[in-house]
Image (cartoon, rainbow, N blue to C red; front, side, top):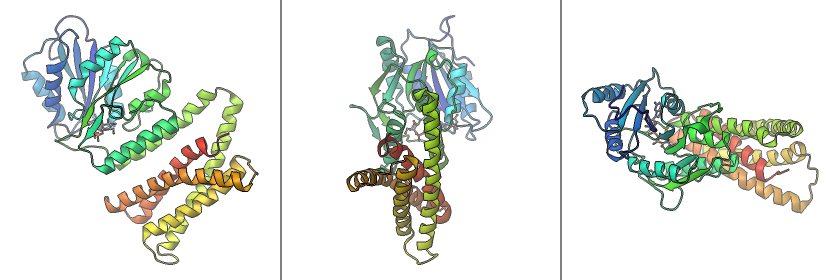
Length: 385
Ligand code: GDD
């Protein structure tokens, strides 16, 4: 549904705004965009609503019927039938977009629309492929997030950069602009929230500029980023990791070698998982009763050691157990695995303490998440081959 068409030309810029239960925010966002878009650039906003129970979609429809038209600015709504995730909502919007330039942003004013003209200008001035609004470069910052959320974002960013080799400083950003043409030939998995990350990994070598901005946490409504979204992130990083490597190597022999090593690493990971799980359970009640997080730490230490020895010997065929080399490798292994352990502890604690999950289930999820990060980090640095 068109709010207005300033001329017969198609819009040059399409702004994709996914919404789920944003009845308190969406009109403010649409109005702010109307206020700031450059008048010489014909712009369309596309709201992609997933049948929000709070009536967001209907609110936008009513707004379109009643609002005074703004020159050079149209608004459209896509109504999807169910909550199918942020990434897939963004893709639906992009498919419908008629502009050559696409801007993606949240609908809760955490992404200031005032930055949009600068994003478009940067894209044009530098003739680059993409502009990412970044919180993690000089001049960028985050307002209103608690320490836990900040840490989570930093960890996710680090995993993307180190594990997937992404160079962009804020690959978790949900605020970015790009030339639509760069998506040509791309097949998306569209898992969870991380559509930008998927583009960055699947389209290496894009010319990208980053501009700083202040992420202002929403004041109305609530975030939809919950634990399943975090699991989705882990899944999507893993998928991207698996799909990226063979492309990079591009040699059959290398890729076969890679997969056999990955297979061994994961077999050992599974034994580590079993050891970790059993030891943690034994010490938190089975054998003797200590505080469940202490039991969890014992499980982590035992599985770290067995994983190290088995990976060195079997996965990488390294039979050189000379003191100096082994200690150096073991230190790296412990360092990276400790990071995985921190993730595990954080997940277990958060699930038990914040979400009242049963410890046994939380432990299973925590161990799996920690094991995943162990693999990525240690494969890359400790046992580099
Ligand atoms: N259509 C649709 N369907 N929209 C969704 C869905 C969905 O399943 N899930 C979330 N959204 C919309 C929300 O309504 C909001 O406009 C936007 O997507 C972001 O969701 P939030 O739940 O508010 O995200 P956040 O603020 O916690 O996370 C922000 O920071 C992340 C970086 O750490 C967002 O900017 C993310 O995009 C960003 O990756």
